[in-house]
Image (cartoon, rainbow, N blue to C red; front, side, top):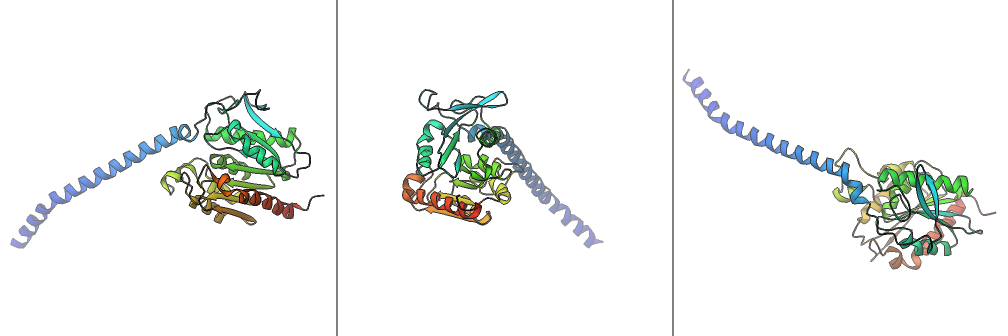
Length: 288
């Protein structure tokens, strides 16, 4: 009897400390869940505002010969640089703080390489109407321009190269996962938007899940990125490359960051794209 009383006494003396531990543990769990819900809510409702930051329009219709094509009740500005002798047309999706005015040099450089080129502005950028831009709108914009190229300009899908730079890799990959194309070029891409910040998947939703879309892309892929990319770690491009199907090519450039990739790569940038076009020739058949 004395042992039982002592055991009960000892147990009762330990209960307050156990109860305190449980209280602290439950408080930590509650705080963690609250923070998670707040972060998830912020990401869900405000991610597009952070992701898309349109600059002041860098061009006018008088300076740049853009065409406005319909997208529902809105309009999308496109810049079409035809090339009668080109085998392939590049459909270019630009980055976050860019518009047709700031990327017109890049589009003309691609044109000089021997391609026809179509660039466009997401709704809310440049002369495109219907902002503010969102990831869903940007994807639909890419689809509208693709349809315009195929149905109005009569460019065969197997002659379209989908090119996405940085944020533009998102709508490009979404498009490539659903539509036919000759090939896909990704410059400074990410596996998904949130993973650029977190490194791993922490939320049940994301923006532009390229790492998921790439498994459904059947066209050849070229991925290019600077090894010193300070905005999107090169590991993102390397993970996408590892997940892509064959045939695939890559260009990793030492000393290149996020916004100076083409300049630092120089002739290697041109050679990689032209070599990729030759790969497409061998995949789709030699030019007639």
